[in-house]
Amino acid sequence: MQHNAKRTEFAGLHGGHLKVRVAAPAVEDKANELLVGFLADKFDLPGGRVMIRRGTRGRTKTVEICGQAAALLARVKKLLHS
Image (cartoon, rainbow, N blue to C red; front, top):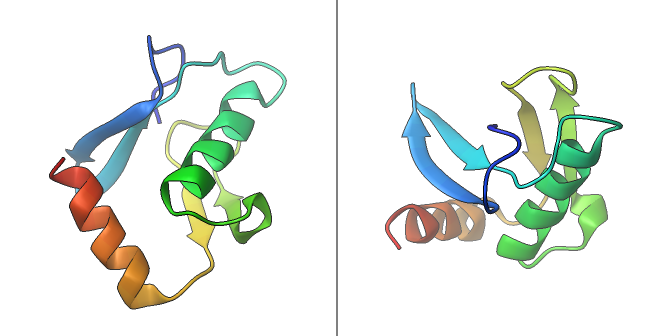
């Protein structure tokens, strides 16, 4: 995740991981909250289905998204190519 970006968006792959730019500072969990909301919106899920499992204080995070795996994977592929 890259915080303090001009806008919140997917930025492709970086080292085999999905990179997301977030338009919020890394202060008081603002960037993490925006990341969770952004991902929930993009995957059409309620916010409680997207959770940061590891890395809340770092740039590299492990995010858990609860939903149908095939549909989520198809959505990721579509978002990366749009």
